[in-house]
Image (tube, rainbow, N blue to C red; front, side, top):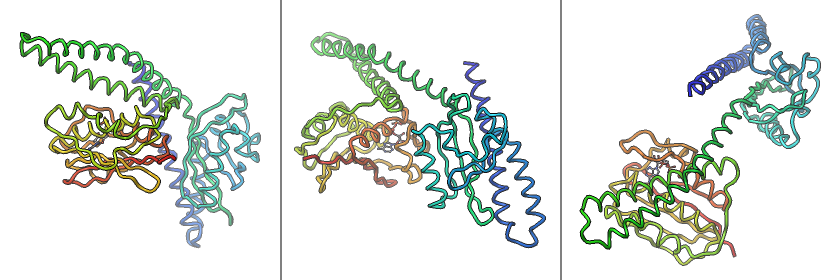
Length: 393
Ligand code: ADP
């Protein structure tokens, strides 16, 4: 663990210094852009150019200047070392695509389009480069455009993130294995507690305390299963292993039975309206999972909203399903991030017991079905989480 902490603080330090260098270079380029045109600015221009050259040359980041056809015009020693060469001359005049696996060329085409065709001021991408010894390195590329002698050139910094990426993969793999291993014993525990509760119900002389404890045990194990499933699904998604098994079924199959646990808690009631008989072609288990997540969230984050309303609307070529609560709503600045991995709204009094994965997983599942997902929320009025699915003939 200590090693991990040392590693991460080492990476944080490197990332910080890289960010600072990046900022220094961008500031120099901005200054060059501003003073280039003014007469009085000639000396300042030359000084600034000198500073730019120094930062460019001695930066710990790989720096290069490229033209619109991705030809490398200038590079610094860090970039030469990054690609595994010994002299700048080996690289100057070649194209960046010469160091890119063919499968990654699309990323550079996108960079070219954004910078030179659409004049996007700033573009960043993650890709892979081939070193001289044919080993691959993972890099983060950041590019900006600047004018030079009547043309526009791209100033690009390249940061080696191979180790960071390998650590990320290791972390994903660990989460995947751990959640997979946890799932079987917890599922068994759930079955045992269900059986125990059923047996208790049949007996008349069990003390009240034991009845309550067995009931709570089943409740908590249910929550644990949700957490483990979220971790497992999120790790499958990251590794591109989440599969969708579509079948044709009426929406009523998932809506009517999905939230019995909520109906039973007596604080909330779930209503449904609209065309429940509509048939959809989708992964039934995963659509059920999304609805349960929406309803559970309404219970967690809108505890005073007694009614949770599920509504089905048939649109021209889609079906829209929404889950609406009358809770406190979500601050508008948080709304665009709600479906991001691990995102949780921090402000407010309600603390969540979750991992910030439910909505991310829901959104990935809906994307894989060709649908859309979103939320309409108003502070003090409530939230309506919805998704659409295409209607197949
Ligand atoms: P988790 O519930 O595990 O935190 P989710 O991805 O399901 O993760 O939800 C992300 C965040 O969205 C929650 O942390 C919560 O802040 C917010 N949220 C979700 N549903 C609602 C809701 N119905 N009302 C208010 N906030 C909500």
